[in-house]
Image (cartoon, rainbow, N blue to C red; front, side, top):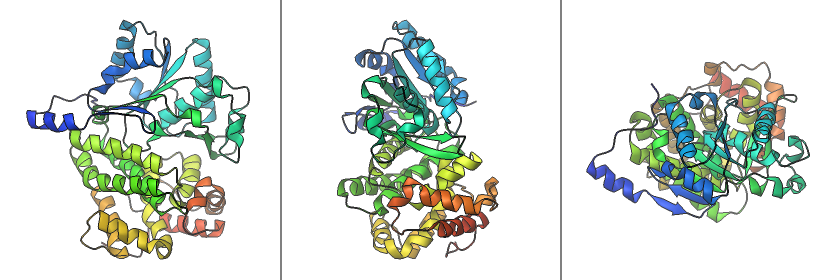
Length: 408
């Protein structure tokens, strides 16, 4: 049975966990640490929310702890609705239905609970409850965000249950346009959560496979941000520290589900990765977005599989970045090849598949995927400008699982 609460740790661990607590004001108000979930009713009051709609996915909605959260709100006088019709890659229709539920229930705020899918859907719903334009009018292109009626955005409290996307501290949502079979980035600064409750204990029930995939998602966010074009030393510093935490604590979180110290560091690193990629992303995400839209596969798993193939293609342009990362992570071999071998070993430790064909993806649509990747906003941050043909070639290599340039 999936668990989201664990037995109390011993005294030594209690002392450690007390040090891993904090109330932060960057990039929004964040309550961080084991037990902070108990602050939810008070947080709703502080944000002026009296009748929240809790948005999560169908799997989480079945768990006892969600019922307990709703009951705790009810005891505090907060009538709380539930919307859980959110796909693993949330769609425009999911958002439309959520807006209808919000408006019909006369709610006045949103509690977003879950991984990146639920959080992205909830942020888009919070945006759309007060708009008169269609969702796609707010695609992150040019100054489309200026079309938003900022006064119409509902207040939102974000509660992550995975350590991966960092969507709880993001100002955008990735939503699938089913008509065009594209993942669309919807952006507005007001989509940033008013408050984040980051309780590492909520991530302990995550299966090992999802711990690995979400953790690698956080790593890819950080590595692509660090390697992205442009000058942003603040993002660079956050990205490097996030990778340091992930390299040390992800294998422990994967192998020891109840290790709250590991879960704490991973949850922090996940948020750090999301902050860092304000600088930009790259070809891994440019490929993962169309693959998620076309094949409905887990975003973090796609990133984890694609990563070494993209790095192999980019390595001549980012050699200094990779060797610097290797030194920061204190790898035994700080060469480019040493770093790439470490990536392969990390994937092996986490039982990440070597290729895309292992998860049911073939090369039938490689030309379309290449075109979609080249047009994806993430492509602009890649250190090497790739054509649609080159993206298709990298994709085909990742499908077959050859030519990483290295072997373990």
